[in-house]
Length: 482
Image (cartoon, rainbow, N blue to C red; front, side):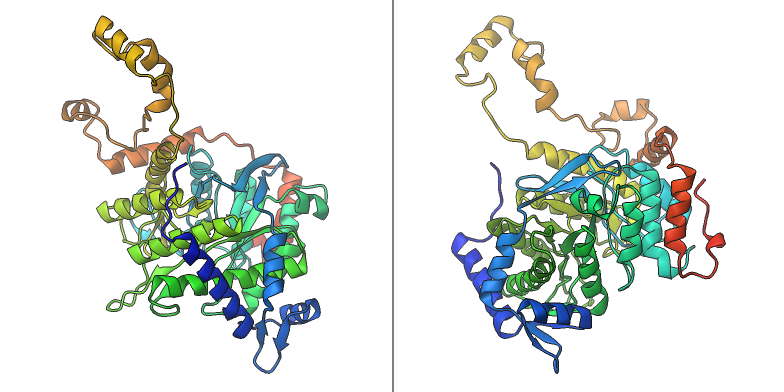
């Protein structure tokens, strides 16, 4: 089995031990009274003067043991869709961009509801993107429900599970209620989770009100939690890889303890979104080589602890779909898969996760296809011993139409779609001399034309909109999706 290991096993254990010491001696600051009270009741050491919680080593170790090593994810109808963990790698779009790169004009702008509907129609049909994520927000709805609106658009246009999150400390309950509309009751949603929600500690070693309350609400509603520290290497985390890995591990483990003390066995993913701080420009590229090494390292740590992993990889930090975007995306995707990262969030994303491109998404789908093919197991397939094959070649004087070739080439040779140019110059001219952007726009339009998912029933749509619009002044002004 192919697996990239950037750390030796002894170093992995040392990093984990050091993270346990950090949690025991320093702990984390928590800016949420509800979480502080729960953790004090559960046996953690709480200093109410400093809002700091420290973690006895045995409680952290017990929490790790209570975690599921694999997590089942169900679709909208309640059928098992995929399993997160083990050797699997699922590619999903990057999340939470503030802008889009318009696929028809090339303009960088804020998104509207029709843009998100186009996105979900396209991503729902891509072969190598496992399930959709809330790639960007729209600015044509009140910001109080912007998080729920993204979920609403995904639930109404795709039957697949989703990756999303809440923007405020009160955001999860209505979103959980919306998902319960597709289950018998709350317990059915707990037993058959259909979403992964992101909860981000405020590095270093701090949990804010929003993430703390979101974590509580997710666990109580059976929503899978991915704990995603956003470390800035050299700014909010040590500039050295080992030191940064200690901080990353400590922050994730703090979130894991919180979830397990609320509900033992609650599903949690060991996540992260580190960036390498640029000391001259003050940017923090997630595709920086230092960040990639950190991603690979914590994937190895998560695997050692038998916890499913997640990372923001397979994305570009540049502004456009250019050679930089391609190299950063492919490099990150390959490293993620070889590191056995279980959920990889990044396809479609540009500009430090600030801009989403539908053109990039359809190209990245092909990158993910290449990566998946590269990661297939290499086995003996009628080719050892090789002498019978050689004897047949000497007799037939060709290989292409041999029985061995005809039997194995469909699975051994990956034929990419239109987004990857494999034509000769003459063939390219014959097919219209199309640029990558011509092909991307044609692919997007074809997918939009082919989209055939039925909209949900009117009464269910009305129920979702009622739940979502509670607390806003003018629910009648919400955009129509029909």
